[in-house]
Image (cartoon, rainbow, N blue to C red; front, side, top):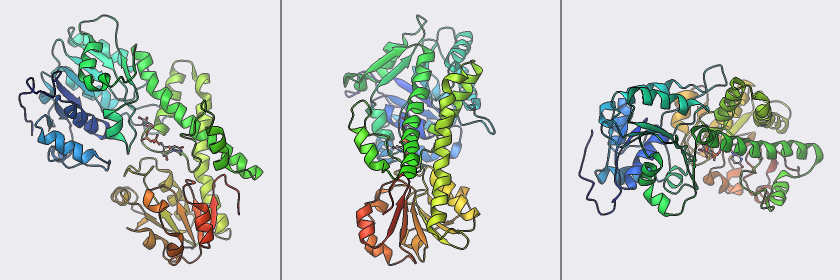
Length: 454
Ligand code: UDX
């Protein structure tokens, strides 16, 4: 699978380096192809042989807009290869560690098994003058510990921490045009990490992208602090939604009005079913766990409330469905539109939509789920749920339709035509994403979290 070619002379890439990317999941695969796009010679090391083979053949094992084109372009340039063998990373000037840090089973803390395994096998091939760059989201203190391992085994090599802020659905754009670069580096040392990273990101640096060069602990915390802030913003507006329901106020208008204040901003103030996915929920929990280990747990107790507010939204959605179905879910047919944790993704990790769908089913409803991209994953992991390909099939004879992931194609449904397939025109907008007036005008009873009833 490995291919190599002469790059140093490439006119587009005067700063070209040999780079390895260890771990080619979501983050690593996008990073590897993006680094090749920037002109570097890149090898992606992925222990899952099937995944490495698929990527080498230009097949993307997940849905991400624009990524397949980027991958194929990078492969065709001859600058990108994949291998299941760590030896392929030998001789790279920079080694990016991009493996996952999931939540530990039954605990809040992050599971560092993959980071540790990847680093220890990388140490077998690491050479003097080379730089190990951590991109995975890790508990603060991890980089210093790994740097000590590097120093012990290869004293002439070094380590830096360079967190990644990519959003699913925008992964390519966020990697090639990030809104900031953060380098966590050690003082002094055998390798000029900042200069080397500047070479890696030469084109991005040339775009005047803001850059923060700092210590390891700050770089690690930038990532968890950013995700905690985003989660807090979402839970804030969802807490306001709870109050709106209690007072008869309207959370969407409230968000618009406070969002006009530049200091607050309208982004990430969309009230609804709350956050899910492979990052925000586990990152805020790992952050709390780490704060506890450091004796600073009080500083983050508010994140427990952020998590609680978020989980309450799912319960509330089920209650609302029960209410509109004449106070009983037993035997009711419910259509669930959306299964991915957010639109433009097939990722169903901690998906609020599936959580609600499963609760409804457990409480006796007959649930049909549809999603434009995530159904293969749902069928594999949630075999008890009935999956259908189209919203019309999901809604056939339905007592209620729930919009739980705001895919564009669901927002564009024609409420009049769609109304012909259901038994009763009741729609619950779990993402405050539908054109309420249009649905009501077509005879639907519209309900949403934090909104006034008609
Ligand atoms: C997030 C961070 O945004 C990204 O910077 C980091 O690198 C990884 O984690 P991602 O998990 O892809 O990215 O999703 P994001 O767009 O942040 O959305 C997270 C969740 O919040 C989704 O479930 C989304 O539906 C929900 N959300 C987002 C809201 O409920 N309301 C909003 O206003 C925004």
